[in-house]
Image 1 (tube, rainbow, N blue to C red):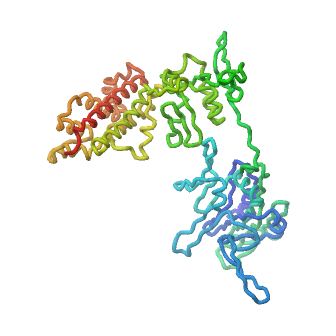
Image 2: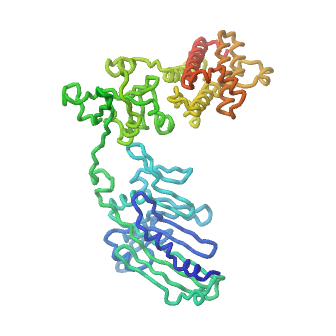
Amino acid sequence: MNIEKEKERLSQQKMLDSILHEPKPTEMLTVYFSDYGSGDHNYGIYCALVPIDQKKDVLSNYTWDLSIGSGVPGSCVYYDEGVETPEYHRFGSDNGIEPLVICRDFHGFKDDYQEISEEFRLFHNLYHDQVNNKYIKIDDDGNETIVIEINSNHIRIRSKELKQFLAIKEMFLSIQFDCREHSRASEKELSLEGDESSEETEFHIWTLAYGDFGGVSEHQAFSRLLGKKLITPFPKSKSGLYGFTKEEPKKYVDFIIDSDEVGDDVLYNSNPDFLSNFFGANPEAPNYLTAVHFKKEVLDKYYGKPSKYSVSDSNLSCASLWGLQIDNHHDGKVCVWLGDLGRDLPYEEQLHWRSYNVPPSGGVSETYFKRQIMAQFTDSDRLEHVFKSKYSELQKVSTDNLGWSLLLPLNDEDSHHFECLRIPSTNEQRDFDDLVLGLTKVLIDSLNEKQLNKFIEKESRGSIKGGISRLETALKNNSIEEYENHIQFLRKLQNLRSSSSAHRKGSNYKKIATEFEIGSKDLISVFEGILAKSVDLLAYFITVCTSGEMKES
């Protein structure tokens, strides 16, 4: 046994430094910790919400003001001249101290667990990620921040949100600690006599004492670190609560709107209040409807997170938080009105768009011009928009005319394959493979084989493998014509997925790649051709469903 290391361990300096560390607003603060480490230590950290005016009383002693298991509804009985009067207390007493962490105990019948004060969770409108047992705050721009992390014996809360809550509550958070280290060496061997220490400051109090188990344990000496530290609130003006906090003015980014005579970029700020409008205000400034141009890759960020963002025909949105009208009807660019960029996008999103900003080349699309300027209803001719429109039409037509869906609706876990279908912005192989995989999920894996089986003789069903073959047989048995090219396309698409997205690329991929002209054409053009044939397939399916020839008799 190394006596010096044992003595250092019993000094608990690392634990003390960790507890007394003043966290930055972005750091996580331990508010609950319970660890009984194989007999050589017992660590206990718990917290309590303490009214500001009780600071002196709280720091007048080392004992905890709220014990684990307390802070729940209860009652007290008061006596006045022999008369008993019970009173209900939400937190079990009338001393004004409240729990932040509530430890639930079910007497061994059910597992114990800890939960965070409902008031704190509602104050910050926290979402509970039940899989990871974390609480997440979503701000007005759609950014997600982990505020609470809960493990079986450890709870941490981000300092910023904690101090905002304390500001409104006009309370301190008392971090209470009772930590013990045990050693098989004796006090005498460790030379601990007279090493006790303590400290009292404006915001913390602690004592470190040593003792001996007196032969009742395999360990001989122990140390006990006992005390409290107060976490101070922010000023109410920094609480983030409406009415108490002064709203920060929105920031706006400068965008490239033109090029000068020597080819240098001409920039202008996107603050809509400084742009000229149809009534002639600020006439020397660019018009609100100045088209700003961006590389098409600007949208990849949003396609990459379909659970958070939605990209559709002329529109980009982040759930219900913000939305932006966009001209996404071009092959290699996206256009947005300068005023819309400032009015509709949060500042962080403006910065993202600025990084893809390019000098203007050409104008907005005819579709966007008719919709935005002429106020005319116009269908998009972009393949990704047409595909999604045809898909939706097919779902309605097949249900209305056949009573069942030819293509089964995607479940939630697969819906992103449909949402992200588009002509890729780059020739990256990964993007191409992902899009091919998504398209096969929508068109092939979703074929309603159960319903198609009804048009196939029972004795033949077992010998027919796969949805494409079932579709082909059902169409043939119903004397439906002109299906051959579409079936051939589906088989080629299936082979492309199998040889590229689903498996290592080898000789099979090279063979099917040749059929799709991969190598002689760039991947953007190849997928554009695949999507065009997919649109033709959906149009054919719509015709078949409208005819009613596959309706059950």
